Image: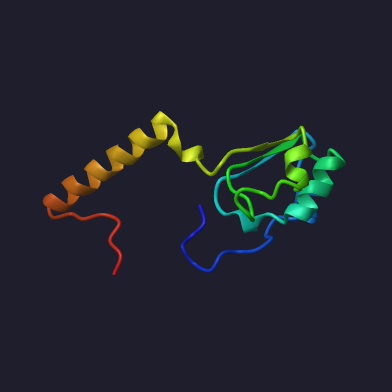
Length: 112
């Protein structure tokens, strides 16, 4: 999870990807700029790791000419990975728990 602060840029690049196992999949559901896409594309073309799943990209959607569209080992989703039923149910449950805690005088997740 990425905190709501100035977004980190290119925290994961070629060096970090080359440290991963060849069977690894890099999954990004946080912020697109975390991954250096130029270096990711290079590594994916070289099959350094098995693949990548990107629910968020530096530019959403990636431009039509982006090599991300051409790679068979990169899976792109339109920043809606959170929309699964289980994820939404967890969100509803957390909201209900937070309301109940507040009503009982024991608020959680307080931001001052």
